[in-house]
Length: 381
Image 1 (tube, rainbow, N blue to C red):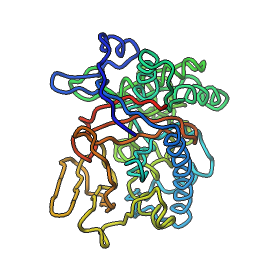
Image 2: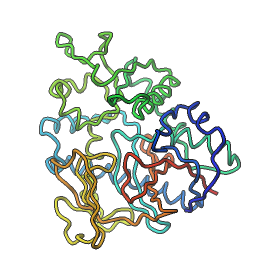
Image 3: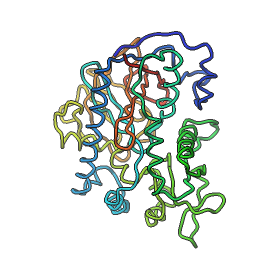
Image 4: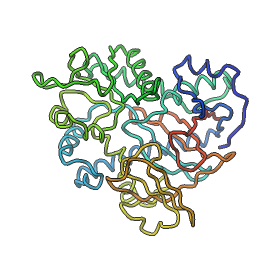
């Protein structure tokens, strides 16, 4: 793997906006960065694909272990959700996508965490970097079949989902064209291509009809199929959590509620217990570092965009702010993330319908990926 500096396309802003990436930069921050790209050998791509498929299989085994051994409390999962999770796991409802965050230094390939419930950076990984490749390097290749696999999965779901499919997200205050909205809009477009009718509804516009015992949209239509870009742990803290759990089977939820087992950082120490010393895992423990005191990352069980991290590296300490941590922490040994031109890349390896589908790369000015990290395209030779 190497980072290659390159001159951006002259009209890159217009090009990425035409395919939906309208949040490519703000006044003081560039999100989409095509002044460089990452180049891989085909053997490296093969290794990433193999590791991603293996990690996904290991995570499913870990979820089964949590259910079989009732380890929900260690993940701070509410008691009321447990029987619903267990039933959803047995019913095997549709699950579409997830994203592993991986550290790769050319030698070691290590799992940092699994964004299995509400992963973003999807549009840029599936479509935007592919168009970049076609414009600049049409004879080279990219590890990227995300769009094709997403479309195939939605087509497969046609007999199983009630029409229309509702799509919901949280709209940040005073923010237009948010990343969440664009991610949901992209997935709505794919669902439409698969012949679904789609309805967009903000999470705070969803209503409850007590007489019909169901959730409804702004036109009073029952919500029978719902894609939500809104975390399960937030849903279970919201006003209508009791109604959601009691009527869970009345709506086909994507992603299903059992995905909260995998998106929880508590899956990481359980993976280490089940597969100690696995070459794609970092040593990880609940609640205490257990000998990892000098080179360790402390993560909340439930956190996003690098919030509330404590990184101890030798004698130095780095901390990030945020609202998380009340639910508990895990301690994970530090991965080696190499610096390229003073930035640190993390690979986002996508899983669509249980199979590795491609990568997107985000880079930061520190080893902790946060909401200011840039997306950089890639190719392989």
